[in-house]
Amino acid sequence: MNTVLLLVDVQRTMLLPPTPVPSAGVVSFAIEDLLRRAREAGALVVHIRNCGTDGDPDVPGTPGWELVHEVLPGEHVIDKHAPDAFAGTELGALVPQGAAVVVAGMQSEFCVGATALAALHRGHHVTLVRGAHATYDGELPASVISRQVEEGLREAGVSVLDRRAVAFAQVVNS
Image (tube, rainbow, N blue to C red; front, side, top):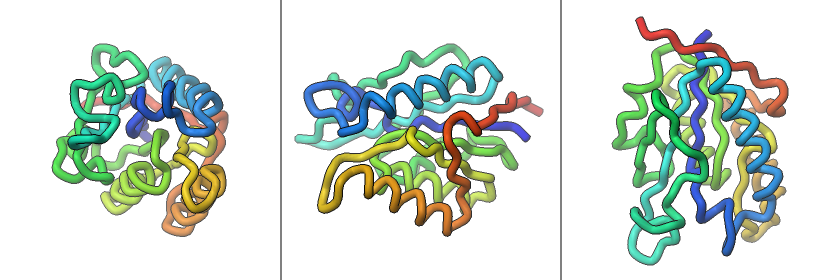
């Protein structure tokens, strides 16, 4: 089965100073490992970038909007304006029908969760990578929020795996 890695909002504003998520170091390491392995396997990699509005730390063209990882030839960047990265974007056309989708990134309870559910509803086998998604502290600590997101997505039908258990397969265009 072909595999697509979706890196959701892996942007400077959430992983680098001055306001990184509490687990930025651990999450960054996990995402870097997934990205390296996806590239080595020849899997399709899609970088999804949130486009904030006035006053947000990720307004297009600002340092916070920039992606953390270099986009290599053959990889794609999708700019989005809603939590679901499929909504109003070309992401659906990029992800081959029947492909497995691996999701990692920022804002577990918003963009990560919405994108994972949208991929699931489009008929993809979806895996959320434990330890490769995060959020900020809110009413609950960020780690609790991320665990709750994992539980909710698992109940919806998303697989939740540790990064070492994730396998990538090459996407072959037909």
